[in-house]
Image (tube, rainbow over all chains, first blue to last red; front, side, top):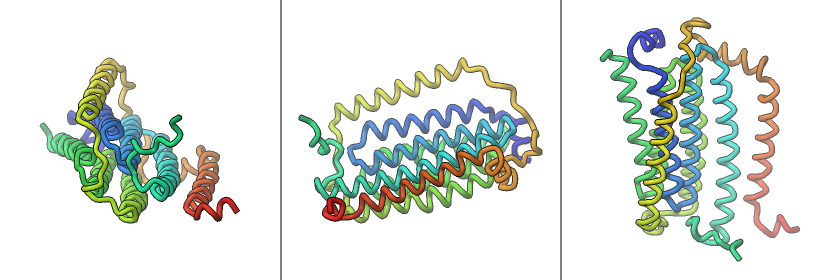
Length: 109
Length: 171
């Protein structure tokens, strides 16, 4: 019902494409601007969610559910990435007593 | 402007605003809470887009599981506003310029994109319901589904191995 109303009114696919683009860029901005490693991981999650929103929008406007299955797989990968990334961060914090990404430079010669 | 158009625009604006607050708020716990708000707003967008099941899954998995994990680690490491690492002003300016340039380039490129014609009511507007998604997941996409379980096992083993004490890894 909602979809039929949406298509008749002016909410176009382009609106969701632009919205997802802006959300993705905010994620990129966060990765660039913040030095806290946990916030950087959170901004990566935000970028993944922007792609999820785009997938769902395309799925709805083209009338198939395939893209929504892909959103599931993106969520699976995001969950796995978050667990491993956070445990690596806890380990790094134990060694360096900081989460500042600028301080993780031990491999630098 | 119709009412649904106003709702969509307001939801989009709110989503962008709370996502911006994730990046701009200096306190890490506040960032996490704003990100949870962003996930709820994205779920509202899913409901508007007729993806009801994904909206619930998004709240359960992202806001319920992943963000609690982030909050847990944040509390565990005892980070506060005082020892929050800050980027220099030049870095902030350069990052803002780069992100602004990126959004301009992406929007300009997408403006010329030719979209396929919108298909209406192929599956009677039920493509977002659990019945149809389960059907797809266990027939067409059963191989990626099973493979993702291997990924989960690998992630679990990796997380357990990493969070053990260093001595036990060496022994």
